[in-house]
Amino acid sequence: MIIRRDIYLDRLISKKNNGLIKVITGIRRCGKSYLLFNLFREHLTAQNVPEDHIIEMAFDAYENKKYRDPEQFYSYCTGRISDQGMYYVLLDEVQLLDDFESILNSLVRRKNVDVYVTGSNAKFLSKDIITEFRGRGDEVHVYPLSFSEYMSAYSGDVSSGWKDYVIYGGLPLIFSFETADQKSVFLKSLFEETYISDIVGRNNIRNKTELEEILNFLSSDIGSLTNPRKLSEAFKSKKNIVISPITVKRYLDCLIDSFLIDSAFRYDIKGKRYIDTPLKFYFSDLGLRNARLNFRQIEETHSMENIIFNELKVRGFNVDVGVVVLNEVDQTGKKIRKQLEIDFVCNRGEKRYYVQSAYSLPDDKKMQSEKRSLINTGDAFKKIIITKDTLAPFYNEDGILIMNVFDFLLSPDSMDY
Image: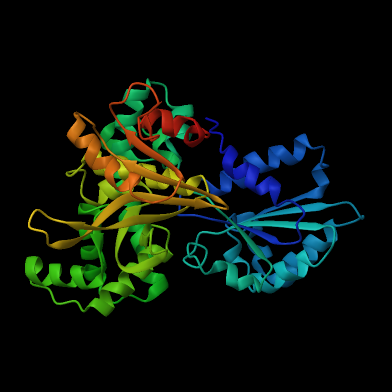
């Protein structure tokens, strides 16, 4: 089965021959190797790059074991470079190559060598990997399948695809399993035996139970505002477990660093400043989140918000939670201060969009509630409300675009409708 990952392929192509090491990051099983060794390689071939100018190496293959020695690999690789034409070096599981940072930095100094790497140990599953290349790294971060990518390989209709996507998420290997039980077992096993093990090993975590309790709280409360102090208090009141806010923050940082979860800071739109806490947390893949809860707690409202967040990140936006502060006077004449929330403030270059996730807009009261924060931003940036029950995109009397979640997810230009 071929699943196009054009958004990432285009990013790789745009970075081709830029003199930097292209480092493809992302959680395990999200499709990094497929992107590099299938889709990008096909692109090179289509561009008439000669076969002998594409140097591939999968360091986890037994037949390539000897090349984990840096001298052996460097000699092999440089020996393949026999003319002044451009050579493309594609390396998988490069962390198995001893002293890989020095080797790759040496290769990329050659004017006719373009280097692309993936890895899956704890270091490559971390946001700090680029620092290993001393200013010569250029990251392409790959997410699990977006809904549009998922539907490109799904054999049913959009409604059925949405239902499955909300439950089992977008890891490409999901398509290898036919039954619900098979998908569930795969995700639960992957979460426990791979993701948690990676995080524990990389960060030398001694109390695995505490980390898992943090995951349970975040899984049960996706998209809710929280912070280390609140989580610490929740542990004490609900579990009778004492974990200091400092320790909770360390666990949260480990989970974010591993790409398993992501955070959104609060941004005061009128005050033009960030508010440190509380934050919102979202999972990079809903299937993994649901597996953590044994598929017991699947609320479509929160799931939709998480999916919209991930889609915005895939599209390259920096995403914050918007706060609109209003100073009002109540019926008694007393001045009151209110904080209204906008689910997502999306910035990319000079563009900004305000996005609300509203599963349903059953009446005017709900519409007024959802749009109140949007119409009080005090600026003219585009404002969007995404729902599940809107039939076709339209602009309301306030100039706010109301659109169905499927229209939003399935069209890359949906925000400019």
